[in-house]
Length: 418
Image (cartoon, rainbow, N blue to C red; front, side, top):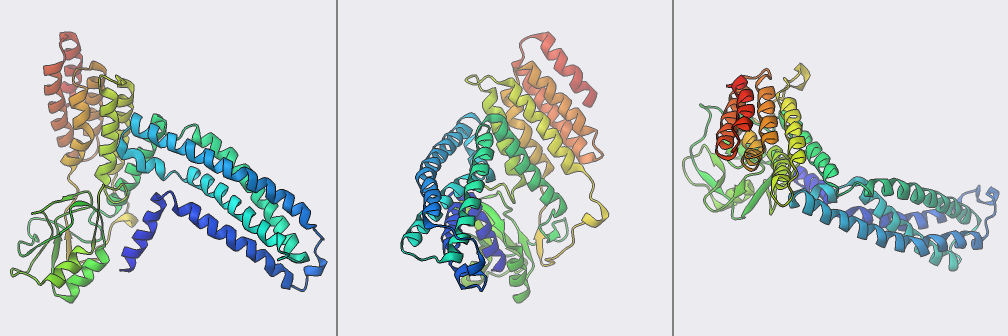
C-alpha cells in the first residue's frame, strides 16, 4: 500500500495544476512566516523598513504577475498543440511534464498569490518592525527569482513543442525506462522460464485499459500470506480486456472474490500507456513520430532518418552488459515475471518506418545500415532480430521501389547482413 501511495503521488507531476498549487501554498505560508520575526529578541535591531516601500514592490508584482501567468499559459497551450500536431498525441504527456515550464508558471502564480496575501496583511498592520524587514527581504528575493525564472523560461518556451525538442524528450523517456528495466529486468521477481510457469487459476480484472504499474511488494505479500506462487501475465503496457488475465496462480482451484480483488488492486490501470514502467511505449512514440514524418502530407524523410539513429543508440544501450554491482537481485521470490521480448521491441521500433518508408531509398538505406550496426553488437539475439527486420524491410522495398538502381543500393547493404 505504501508503494501504491508513493507511485500515485509521483504521478502528480504529470498534472499541470499540482506544482502551481504547491507554490501557492508556499507563498501563503511565506507571508505569515515573516510575522515570526516580530517575536525574536533581535527584531528591534533590524533596519526599519516603511510599509510604503514594501507596498510599492508588492503592487508591482501583483499587477504584473497575473498578466505574465496568463501569457505563460497561452504559450504553453500553443506548445502542447504544436507537439501533438507535429509529432504525435502520445508525446503530449512528455511536453506537459516539462519541468522548466511548470516551474515558471508556478513561480508566476505563486508570486501573485504572495503579493496579494502580503498586501492584505500589510494593510491590516499585521507586521511590526521585524516582520516588515523579513517581508521586504522575501519580496526582493521573490522579485529576483521571478525575473531569473522568466529569462530561463523564455529560452525554453522557444523550443518547447518543436519537433526536435519532442524527439529529444521521447528519446530521454525511452532511454530512462529501458535502462531501468535493463537493471531490473523482472521487476524484482523471478524470471519466467520453461519450468516454473504456473498453469492454475487465472485472475481477471474488471477494468479495461492499460497496465501502468504493478505493486510488486503487495503482490509478494499476498503470495506469502496465501502460500501462492503468482505468475504475472499482464506486464506494464499490456491492454486489459475481457478474457485477458492479469496473473496466473499455481493453485488449481478457483479463489474467492476477496483474494482476487486484492491481487487486481496491485495493478494500476489507466486509459493510456505511461513511459516510466513501459519501455516499449517510448519506442512506439518515436516510431509514430517517424511514421507521421513519412506520410505524404508531411514528406519529411530527414526526421525518420534521425529517429532511426536514435533507435540504434537506444538498442545499443539496452545491449550493454550489466556490471557486477548492477546485477538485479530477486526481491519477490513468489512472483514470476516474463522478460521483455526483443522481437516485439524491434517490431515496435522499425515496423512502421519500414512500411511507410519502403518506397524511399534514403530511408531504406539508413534502415539497412541500422540493422547492420545492431547485428554487430555482442549479443546473438540482436543479430537474429536485426537479420529478421532486414529481410522484412527488403521485402517491402522490393514491392515499393520502382527504380532498379535504388533497389540495388538497398540490397547491397542488406547482403552484408544476410
